[in-house]
Length: 460
Image 1 (tube, rainbow, N blue to C red):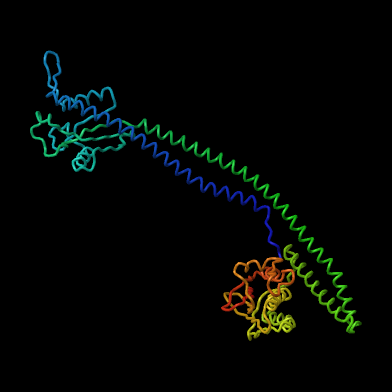
Image 2: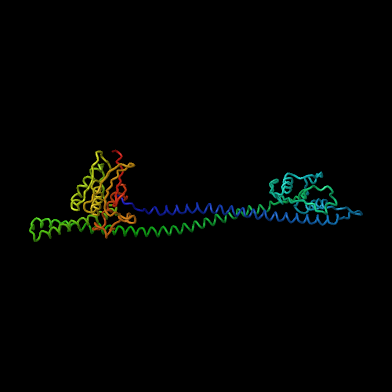
């Protein structure tokens, strides 16, 4: 069996994946932050432009109301005086502003016959919205000859003082609008420059953060690699220790077993015979423990050799049943197994699979009460050969079902819990080495069902 190990090359690839994930996370977050900042700045610029236009509007409205409250004002032009009405004032101030400031001011009315007061599309839309109550003001950005123009419109309201000059007032107070426009190109160019600065700062910050993370990841990966090397050395030492000590124990145990067999043949009298049988039984038990320890060490180190071949699992199960039959007779347990008529072909090491099945059967026999039975079944399911061993013993609590497959785990308070607690651990290791699965299921009675599944042989 090949041991699954963690290659050192996995560490750099893990670091690269982490960096990629960080880029995928920080990149969109940074992009969203950049867009949010850009929109906030644009909103701030528009707010400033609106406040500027609103200030001009209030100045014009206040001046018109003052002139209207005085019935107009007279300006001296040479030896004559000219009456200045609010409308004339608005026109004159607009002409004056164009010469000195980049502002355009206009009085626009829907029903006006004066060409100077005829509204354009923006002004018409603004007047209609204000008359319907949808808006109290309207603004928009207009591109004119690659320049950005800010346009603003607010209501033109005739107060009572205006009735002196305007006899035919419409039914609504809002007769038109005061339209104000001025260039905003320089402000939006500044916004565009700031966007570039934000992008550079964001990109540089992200790069610095990623570089720092890469440095930290390299250090962390280096530490993890060293720790992993230490862990591998410790695991190898532990595996070698178990392998060597169990291997060394096999020789004296074999010698003791041979000597006990000789003694058993020569000492058949009633005085020494029972002691020899005790010796033989315990030597056999010790030999089984050492064999289990050696198998565990081989499984952990990946040195368990498997001689795989195509075989009929039904025959293997039958041999395993025959192998544990003496133990079943000793415990007065009936093993119920009906060999199927059809073969159940798998690719496996016969001896190792038989060992795993025998461990399950032995476990079921030990935990069953006298007079009970153990049922063995075989079935095909989803491209797998499934073998189950069902007993009627005390069962296994749900909280312990995952623990029973671990090394040295024993339910010490239950019947049949002698030994080192390696039987199910070895069974799991052997089954998984064959790319199979082992699991526990609950029957509809007290007891437990141990299951093994192995892939069906492709050429079967």
